[in-house]
Length: 124
Image (cartoon, rainbow, N blue to C red; front, top):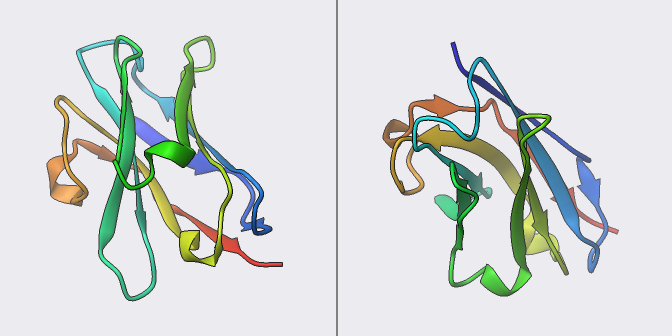
């Protein structure tokens, strides 16, 4: 059974870079044509699709976040990582990683695998 676990600091200062890692167990991130995605949900807002890295290493990002976002992977550790630069308090959210067999949107039902989420607060 594939499981996803997010990890990273829960508090980031404004203007710094947020870095989160998703560790995948029970399956390879390079297999089965899967897409590995980051999604976030802020208080009072809906879920927001951030971007993905797929089985071949190709990436795509939300146009609104593209200039600040980078998603990479470490296949030896079966992990993929989100970096979001120049954060502001508006980036405070619960961040989720998820896996699906195609490019999907921000809703949980679109994914086969979904992490438990990790709270990130941007504050000085």
